Image (cartoon, rainbow, N blue to C red):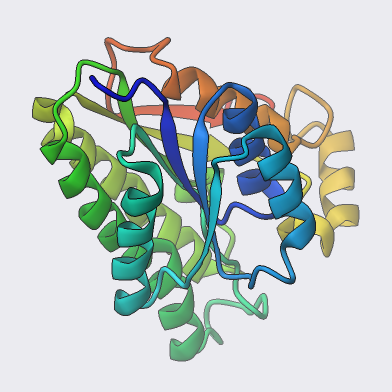
Length: 256
């Protein structure tokens, strides 16, 4: 291809797992379109760090649950990057209130699925179509960041579990559909990772880890997820698609 630079779009990029992923890609030589709902003045420290590593990278403010914003995000990404080799679907939210599923509100359900599942699905649709039009022999990938909650029940945040289970199937469907264009699709399932989302229940998770909920007895870090994403983006698992990778400290090992 004429332009040899590697380009990536990362959603939910300015904090937590998304920050770790976007900075890891930038450090590996990628030009990054970082997408986040936070305005530039709020995310200034992150933007400065990203651009200090990759000066041509850009930051796009947008809400992936909005159809208009998804259109704009896609347009700005391709205008700023020229092409997209890797899309990392990381943006997601937890319920504002952890409520028993018998008390879950329709508003909470709609909010979480509107961002985590519907927004991600249709942003992927837009970007994947443009990726498919671009002819190249370079490794290309779409990577969905889901969660162990795709299969692990948490009855006090059922809408989150449902959104991640749906996103898991979306990843499978896109893997099937995009293979003909040479685009690999992967699902990365983090376990208990130290982010803003888990900060409010850190004591609970520390106790569970100490009691042996996962064989590797520590919380995961965003960098743990980022290294996995980078390996997938770089094509180290090139003869695979639809692969589900747990970054969970071994939490999903079944044992007697």
